[in-house]
Length: 153
Image 1 (spheres, rainbow, N blue to C red):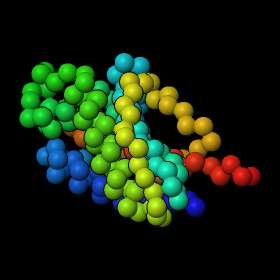
Image 2: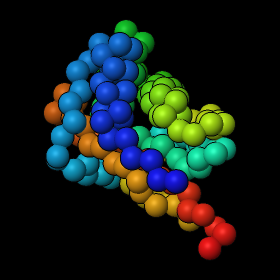
Image 3: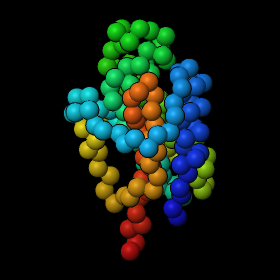
Image 4: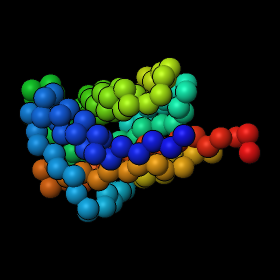
């Protein structure tokens, strides 16, 4: 069963950014460009149950620092890498929890994982069902939803 929910993801992300970070985010057609191996972050949550797949948030480390600073009410210069990863994981978890509410039941979400990557996470036997690009403070990021392929074929 393929689920496509670009509009809902756009709304979830905008609401989370506004409510928890007091920041504005807008969907964009500009593609996300990885910022190099040490400057690109990926937060990932697995969904299992009636629907199976993953939700991943890719963002430049610079945006990760800005959202961590907003979440912790700190200056960007005071934020450390652990705080950035914690906040990116929590934001990914919030987005995934909202997406889970759209999926057939029962479904469960995993704890979030965060990686410093060069946009190279691989999810075997999965295909992209939805990808939404965003912009915040002139920085691009995106959320991608992958569905696990039915292995009975």
